[in-house]
Image (cartoon, rainbow, N blue to C red; front, top):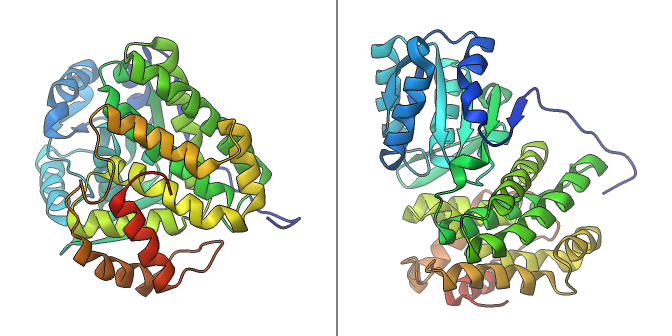
Length: 355
């Protein structure tokens, strides 16, 4: 980072605390929502129905078709539901899949979004949108997709399985790691990133041992908030590009892909990003950041999560195609990556383990 920097604060309201789901009707009223469509995945239908009941007359119905990577077909179905319900806003209940669908509706129909996250994905903190069509994921930035209000209720994460908690937490960590070496970083983002990484690194082992640890849940959700805010304020790098390509090309689970890829990208980038490396050493209390990140991935693996691209079903013969797609439209990165280095990184992630 140079001596000069630019930091643009995001126009967003955050309500954080156990039991804060109860404020949803007031938050919807603040945003002027009279007919809010509640969004969720099929798995979160029960929670979405309870949220709709809580909203009462302000609820226009429930659309439970959200899917990973926001397929354009899903967006079209949600747009039809919006039109049928005459909705004037959305309440996105769930993780990155549901928040991503809300963003797509904000982008295409101008609807305000109120987010109620139940994982540590962090998408609710960013103006980044993504759509998948014909096995290709397109992303962009637009302030219009940023949720107007985010309600963080740690109580909603209490039933998140341990393996999902850890992989989702590593997904959040990835946002902070890349923010620390982003070309548009700032002291504000660096401070949030270091604190967010520390909170998550301390919380995830607690949740692996006891998913019902309330202090661990609160710390993890706070860390995810900070890491997501870092992603929203900076430019994504090689790690996110790889995960976007892999996710779009093979429909891979988002959090698990991040957890597998992150240690290998960190091993590639951090030798040329000493300030980022130093901040992560402090936050993780380690002298070897890639190894510490790999230890967190191994923790998820011991809980039943996949530990390699091979376990996710990616064939080794597909890796050159992934590399070609990444290099065709690369993201900013502190260390230029050539095809040979990129293939080496992909093969390492395909095998899994410590870089």
